[in-house]
Length: 287
Ligand SMILES: O=C(O)CCC(=O)C(=O)O
Ligand SMILES: [Fe+2]
Image 1 (cartoon, rainbow, N blue to C red):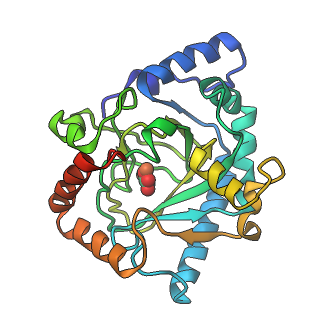
Image 2 (image 1 turned 90 degrees about the vertical axis):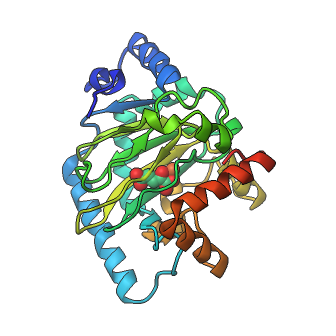
């Protein structure tokens, strides 16, 4: 893999001094992402990873999982439970929360805690941004297991956050040529803006690949909480679902239309891509 500036230089030490923080912030503004090595305790993460796997097996065997909703393409969303709180504390101790604040000073203070489960035999996702371009927020991805090209290291397109690309422009300007895989060791952190183009990749290993995704100040989440009458300041994001692990749909709904879309994508990614080009010509969502 080609090592990028961001990967090579990101500090292993806590980001103690504001000068360091300002340098990192500037690099983040340029590239749309930063990688930090060795932030979160590998031992605690292996414990969490084992628990996630156990819960997933249990839900599968109990027939408690939905069909479709990301299961066909192999990319599932989940809530990693109260036992993942140590990850947030590690981000704080490392100075990463302060850095996030420096990068997004005006974000609503709403944290959401998720985990991407990349299942064995998954396919490459479509390139996308998370949420709307005009509402970007920070995502902290934490490797729960060592992640390489075999078990599905994420693919990002550096600096694609700087401009709004409707999907037809994404295709005609051939942005996929910027492809940069980000292998991570257990405990490494990828900070990325939600508006940086990226995709989940095939997992060719026999076990699921979990990757935590903490989002900071996602306006869509702030809105839906406000609509539900939730007091954001009082809300504890680790106590969602009584603090228990849960599995969620990702990208595709688990109703019949969602399953049809997902099957179409898996069987014929080009057809799906063509559909997105056409949709991007008429909608303002961009993808
Ligand atoms: O699992 C990954 O590597 C990325 C998944 C992703 O980007 C998503 O589901 O939105
Ligand atoms: Fe994503």
